[in-house]
Image: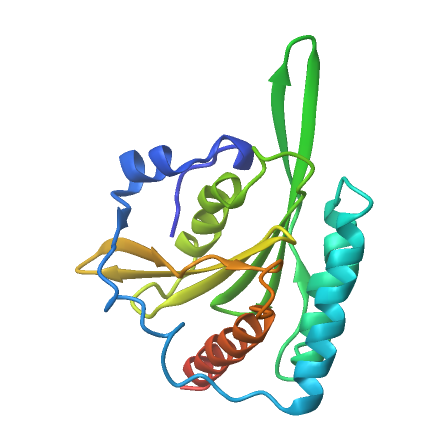
Length: 215
C-alpha cells in the first residue's frame, strides 16, 4: 500500500516510476482479460448501446462535452445497461481531483472523478473540455488508486472514460514489483459502436473482481 501522503493532482507516471518502481508491460500476454472469454450481449443491450452512441453524437454538436454530461449521457447508461447499480456491485464516489493548465494569463481547469464499482474495479471519468485532459492525464491518478489496494498479489482493474475514449488498465505485483498494462483505446465515434466491446470487457472484469472477492 502507498505509504507517502501526496497531493493527488501532483501524481503522474514519472512519480510512480521513481517512487514505487512501477513498470509498464507491453507484452500482450500480460493483459489478456480484455480480449478473451468476453460475454455476449443481448439484442436489447446492443439496441440500448446504439442509443447511447447516438446521444454522444448529439452531444458533439454542442461542445464542450463536460464531465457531468459524460457521466449522465454516456457512462451512467452503460452502467445501468450492465446492471452495475445492482448487487453485488455498488457505486462509491471518491474525492474529485482537479486539473489545472496555465495558458497565458488564464488558467484552464478540469476535473477527474473516480467511482468504485467493486473492490479491485475502478472507473475514472475525465472532464474533456480540452485535449490536455486526455486519458494520459488520468492514468497516473488511476494507478495511484490501484496501487493503494491491499491485495496487489491479485490483479486490480480500472477504466478511464473521457466520453469519446475508453481504455482499460490492469495492475498487479509480480515479485513485489507493481506492473501495469492497458488495453487498446475504444472510441465512441467509431461507426461499429465499440461501446459493445466496452460493456463486454467491463462485465468480464467485474465478474473477475466478484469471484476474487468471494474467495
